Image (cartoon, rainbow, N blue to C red; front, top):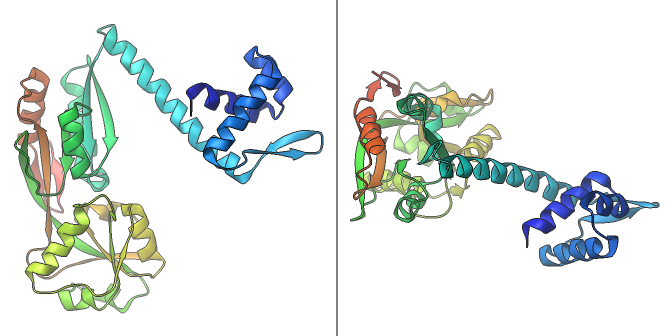
Length: 302
């Protein structure tokens, strides 16, 4: 699949006419039709269908259009940032993060990080801890903010603090009215774990907590996203163990209940390449060292 094919597809989708699209692209219609046909063959579905004398998008075509619009906007932003860096207007500093830190640590940290140097372009990428390690070693990111206690000889890590874990419970569940839950309460329900892949991940961290307590969930449902897990809790499918700051993800159908047993916590960690001696990284680490826990696990920036 080539970028030009995507651009051709987007123009045809905008015009809903091969003739008008070809004219706008300054090309003949037959080559344009062939390129769209090749794209459909590669994807394996039809993106357009006949509608009287014209054409219209299929359901698959509408989905493909939405996703490629997002992709092309991101590509355009990346090109612009690359040009700024290439012109030495700004340097790039990549930050990988797990989604759950968006509800507590990340917003304040990124605001302060962006203030360190106006000539540094902060690039954000959502990825689990395992993916952060690979991205650090290949240079895609410069720091990672994760939760899993992994080790690697090329990666240095700083534990910022341990965040308490709580249970996301359906409001209609009998557990929702309790002041706290025990392991037995949790194991009586279906446990929704995330992410399902790749592993190891936060899901394995949660399972390890149960293992250390000599317990193992018998009913488990795995999903890939935190938001999906909370959505399934709202639907009454089961309960999820989430960081305390996730209470910021408010849902009418979900109640967040403390877990009244020790050991239910998740470390928030900063990772970086051991051989990175950049001045901006040193300033970032100094900023990270200054983060201290606040009651309710919200970070406080000095």
